[in-house]
Image: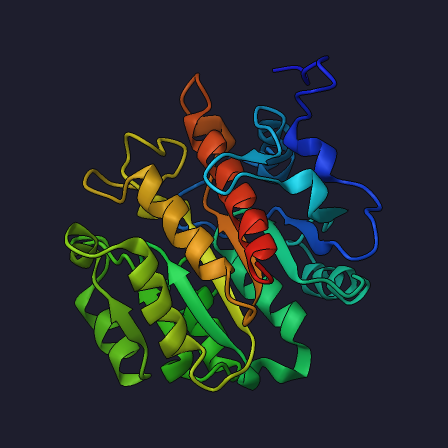
Length: 300
């Protein structure tokens, strides 16, 4: 979809630029991991496709009555080159280290291996001072190195297990041995069923209270396979009965409104598997915009 030629309808892509002093600042980084996926994933760049999808949307948040173009500036730092390859971890760390001061870093995956790479890179030798919230159907606590293991890799590297809160875990999408491992490591879980009766905003605050109880920075992983498969056919691990698009968006806007949240990723979209109408990428782009909108709420 081409950008609107109407000067009074600026697309969300127009947020990228030098910005003005006094605005909130967001950095966008692409970490296009795919090679270690448990479910084979195409190599087509998801970060590039998400950037294209942003052109479908405007900068005006109707619910807030606020124009993001007046409140935030976005730096697009580009993508890590071949993050799965030799030296990929070092390249991710180098790109993240070069980012200027900002209120939020948005990481465009890639599969969920991007979570381990990005949080490791952003935390450096301070990983034990971070908390982690995952909005995900899966524990991601497998052994080894894959898109099914980032949470375990992070805990093994020094992220305290009791500062991890996993939201939206799905029935029949995890295993008993790995669930026992996660409990033994002290990880918290907020069951998917609680979305039936409770507001996403309240669950987001609870997750932050658990992951951020230490008062330090929190990283948020948004694995879109937490959503219903009809909404995200481009997520190989999605299943029927997942969260609605509205529930995902509300959770993201609520969690990212906390100043403790310093980074948020969007992962597990396989562009080649998406529906012809691009519904998975469209939701991914909206998650990015919800996170950006949330940053402008921090001082509101």
